[in-house]
Length: 226
Figure 1 (tube, one colour):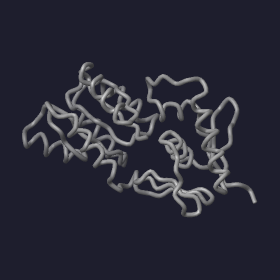
Figure 2 (cartoon, helix red, strand yellow; figure 1 turned 30 degrees about the vertical axis):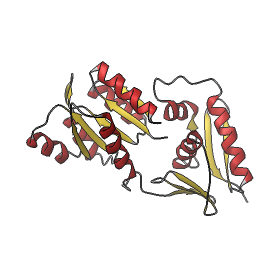
Figure 3 (tube, helix red, strand yellow; figure 1 turned 90 degrees about the vertical axis):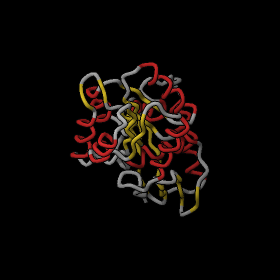
């Protein structure tokens, strides 16, 4: 379940974007200023960003250049009314991965995002592993001893979150944000239920890494001690 950030100050359009992306099985957060975008990007991991350029606190190309200057490879799709060739060249030159002009068809936006997420880039392309569990970040597929595992979308997302920080505690709130977004309606035990199912599945297929609950804090995954 990929998590997207929509940076758009038009509340009506932003609401429609988040609604459509949610229906397409994405988790979508929305902010309306560069300052808020910087804040959430510093605290959260996103699969891609949909970025309007004309924001109340400035030209978002500044934000994009800052991301690339800090070697942040998160895919960025610019969504803007600026449609001249010069504008498109400037946007791509600043580090955008794609450029879509308003007005637009939502189906095209969705297709472009899906194409971006299929690209094996620096951020998405590295396989992750702990014990005999391997996670293909491009296909978003888990393997145990090389055998593909059938997991739900949320179980897959939780495994990716934990395995990216293997050996470190991931706070429960960070897991909830990744699964449901900043404004998500999370049932009190939703994460615990997903963790329980994932832990049970991994044990049943002979995984040599365990998910541990750190009470009052969060979760971590680490290789089983021999």
